[in-house]
Image (cartoon, helix red, strand yellow):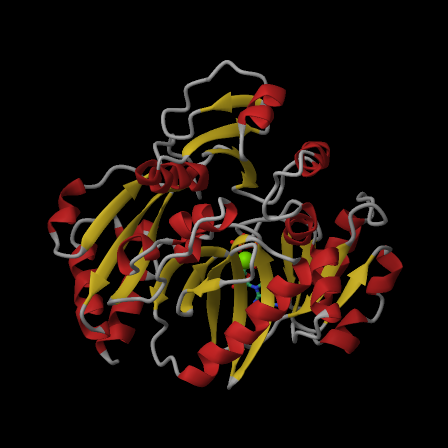
Length: 379
Ligand code: ATP
Ligand code: MG
């Protein structure tokens, strides 16, 4: 099988690595240049996009912000999975909110702003703490503004006056006082079979994911089932095929959907070591019409993102159950350079391994690792 992936970053790279044993050959489109590259070596394969589409059995995406003209061409080939509508839902927060309303799925109270005047009196309606999100092209907390007092809002209005909000609306969302962040990652095939991973608990810092733990500590069947029924409703509404991630806020026993990612997801990377079949392989199985693999977690797992740093001792892989996944990128501030997967026999054991990792890592780049370690010690 030949699969063409739009986007040539680490997610395409990890799809390539997961596809090789199945003899699934992966090529990637660098969407900035339309060049076709090998997503591991980044070597230019010197074929045209049209030829790559013609040669592929399946087309897929590693991120949702693919130029719409490219997506249209992909959809028209009849080979795109997930479908274009699902990808656009992930790329556009207005479409996302419309889908959530259609499927009757709880999410944070919000208003869609297409005109600055709509922000008048918004703090009276949504409360003092508001997060404003650009409806398109946001990721890792970029394209977001947090407001906690009227003067913040006044300053922002001067920024928004320069934006075309009719064209790219802003979502004004109430800051939800959640207990914690979770995500459900799962894969769906074209017959509607699903392989769902256990809920992961996600810890962010400055809008970016730093640590995921799966299964989430203190997870009960009711919570997992609630998340699974949200996932099922959204997947069926979108006629989804492939791996899908649903980001959630837990508030008491309730779950609110934060956002969807129509692709493999950072909070599912733990599955490379922690599940029989990882999210990348199950994505490929789903889109290639192969049977889905077991997605149960055998152990307690975690994923620790390596952000904005590359110099540390790789000897940390000497800690039992620790694996390093490097993306081969040049270091830049806030850039995801790789991740560390950790598997353990218990949450307390996981916490100890986090502490051991701390001896190898420059901790200013891992601000959530030791706080998580101390929480895990109490589990
Ligand atoms: P990513 O691409 O990393 O998932 P993103 O830039 O697409 O992030 P969101 O997931 O919407 O954006 O927001 C990033 C983080 O900001 C969330 O994971 C959460 O920690 C916080 N956040 C977003 N919306 C809210 C909200 N309404 N209330 C409280 N916190 C929020
Ligand atoms: Mg998010």
